[in-house]
Length: 486
Image 1 (tube, one colour):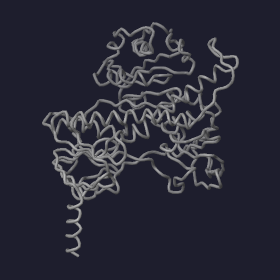
Image 2 (cartoon, one colour; image 1 turned 180 degrees about the vertical axis):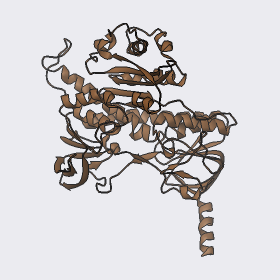
Image 3 (cartoon, helix red, strand yellow; image 1 turned 90 degrees about the vertical axis):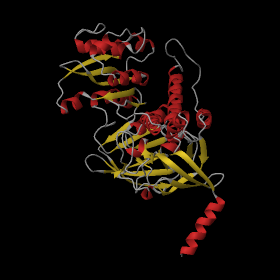
């Protein structure tokens, strides 16, 4: 047996190319490729391993392609508004048509462009991109297979950026009809009937997009509200949109199973009272969350501590194993690309000898629904739970000239600021409305810098822009908003 093991390793060494490096990054998603680029910029000999395409879930099959489809769906909806009698004095004859194959091809052209851009940035930073799947023998050595050639890589520092994947329900395994968000972005035709399991941000984003494209959409959500990470005041405009567009939302409902005959899948579920129901669909989109990629690549051989399903790290993203670091989805919530990127940059700088720590005051989260939602910091209820006495400033987009001029002021949207009542330091900013995702940077900056209501109110915001609603909400918190009456 010992001889067989020895022969196996000898064969591997003969067949595989051996590479020693200062930094090995596993996973070229928004955390991994940023870490690798920064390490390369700092002069560290860096190798990054990716089993698919550089860019990871976010760029290849998540954030970017989904926003492309969402934008295309919104464009289609806008064209429909101009059919017949028209809208805003603009009308077109006939009705617009959707060609999903061409839409997906357009989406893919964006993905390809960005993928090549990431590869170019890695090359410019003198980072070696190795294609294949890494499997660790121990904390600092991995085998890479599945690419153009086999590798054995030894590193002084390892950065784990393995990401996450869609959760599959054990009683509804993925197939041609029961799909994850990845397959939902690759459909060659618009499903006539779409059932979405889960009304979190992924399910709502894609469900709303397909409703705009013409699907009859039904949601099955186990909790008693949509988007549970937001309060009901924030989600009310989205609920209004769903009702207006005849989207059925079953709250307190639980999927129990599904059977497929031909092209039709029948979903069995119970409603909030426990009564059994069946619903037929062309496609069933399962969006019940994501789980970290911790299986199948040798994590158990790296002697790192775990925290539930996630790799445990400190405020510098160090694991319990010396010189092994972990970033992004694999270390826990929030599973957001911009969190991963920030962690990746920090880790590479620490390896290079800089004094850094990952300690953001808050990380903004955006839901690209209709209307969009932005949240950063504490909600009023969360602040109350922490014993913070607050003052709330709120300004509706119905009073925003820019929103009205964009035909976007009637969706019930607003900006809401939560501040401490004793010193007016802002602890939370939330907004819902068309295009509010573009305000997320200003919101996050205000929280990160410890801004007070006076700081925002005293900043001259450009007119006419949606950002004026932020300043007005600060003025409202101070008790003297200009463009709304008490």
